[in-house]
Image 1 (spheres, rainbow, N blue to C red):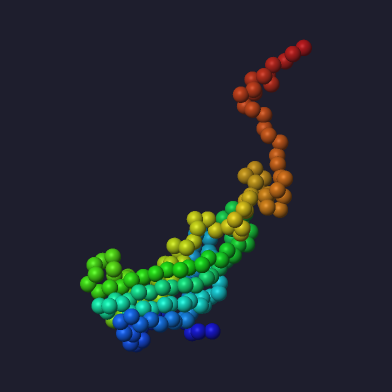
Image 2: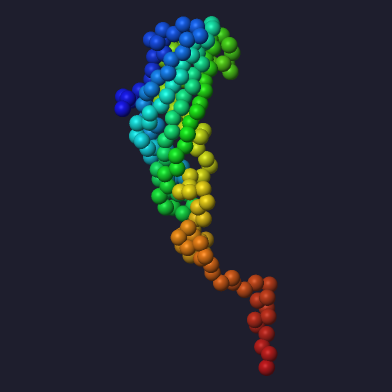
Length: 172
C-alpha cells in the first residue's frame, strides 16, 4: 500500500514539454456529514492514480482517478448503506492563461494539494441521496415498517373525510 500523500511536489518530477507520468498515491478523504448523519469513506486510505502531463509554456494537465465507498445509514430506510462511487476528474494549470486555466489545487511552486482535490472531486460524484440500493423503498410513513423487507405492506385506507357527515345520519 502506498503511503498517505496529502500534498505532492510536481516540480520534482522534472517533466519536459510533452512528457507525462502516472503516479499511484494514497489519500485520506476524511468523514462526511449529510443531514446530521456521519458517513465514513472506505477504504480509509484511498488509492488514487494521478496522470501528470507537461504542456507547452510551463502548463500542466492533470487527471485524478479513484473509487471509494461511502458507509453510513441509507437516507430512505435508515439501514446500512455502502454505495461505491468512481471519480475521474481533470484539472489544467496554465500560467498566464487566465483565471479559468488556473487550478485551485496547485500553488505557484507546482505543489499539488491532492487531499483537497480528491475530496472535492468525490463530493461532486456523490448523489443527492445516499441509498442502500437504487430501488430502496424506504419506510412506511404510517407505521415505520421497512418496505424493502415487506413489499406488500399496506394499511386500510381511512374513510374519505368528505363523507363524514353521512356517518352522523341515523336511519331507523
